[in-house]
Amino acid sequence: MFGRESAFGSIPKETGHLSNLEGLHLGENHLSGPVPREIGNITAVVYLYLWSNLLSGDIPKEIGRLHNIEILDMGSNRLNGSLPSEIGNLTSVHTLYLWNNYLTGVIPKEFGKLKNLEDLYMRMNRLTGPLPLTFFNISTLKSLIFSDNMLTGILPREVGNMKEFQTFYLNNNMLSGNIPAELFTSNIVTIQIYNNILNENLLHVLIPSMFMEGCALDSLNLNSHQFEGTLPRSLENCRQLQILDVGNHKIKDVFPFWMETLFQLRVLILRSNRFSGIILIPSKSNSSFPKLQVFDIAQNSFTGSLPVRYLNNFRALINATENMTDNGWFKK
Image (cartoon, rainbow, N blue to C red):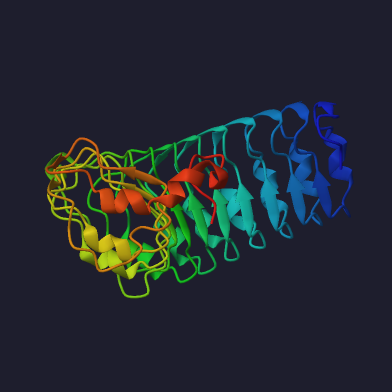
């Protein structure tokens, strides 16, 4: 293990002689050049951290020899080329981070053989093609993060089969077609699928209306998809919902006063839709939206007075910055 920002130069090929090495931490340094093929010889390694360096070139296919590895983090480098299918041989890996590189090409179907994989973090690359269906055979998978790529194809219904799935980020890609209802009947906690491209024949689709009782969602971001229809009342079943962003659509509805029963809600974005009518609806709650910190209803067709009753209850707005995280949303 090297101290932060203390290692320069390239990774020596002699690293491959460390056949009994179980852990190697070279993250947050200034290492450059390729990842040596000889790294595939350290077959006893359990964790390998190479993140946040200046490494370039392909990911060597020899990395598929690391059958004991559980954590592989090569994120935030300058790696390029396609993903080697040999990564599918890493059947012990549970954490695989290859984010913020220049990786291209399709995702190998062999990734579906990663039977112990829990977290796959691939955002900010240049990957293309569809999500392989083999992903959804991995029963242990909890987080699948492919935002900021160039993925195409549809969201497969098989996502509903994932029993451990919690985090699903596919925003800023070129996915098309309908969003499967199965996505919202699973155990997923956080969904971000905004900024994708719908098929020409599916320019106007409905937000899936089925949010089952006991829905586990705490964050739902569907910004910018041109959805039509009304806001589904079944969102009431998502009792832990903290963030709801349905901005920039064509939703035609009245103000969702029924959401005031979602006591954990912190962010409510309805901007740039076709909501209309007054907001002064008789309340069933003595404390409407008690934790709300972001309330955006701009560019709609609401009429009448501002909702003073709600505004008086927005005490959480006063302390909004105290709970803000680095990505602009809020801590639990």
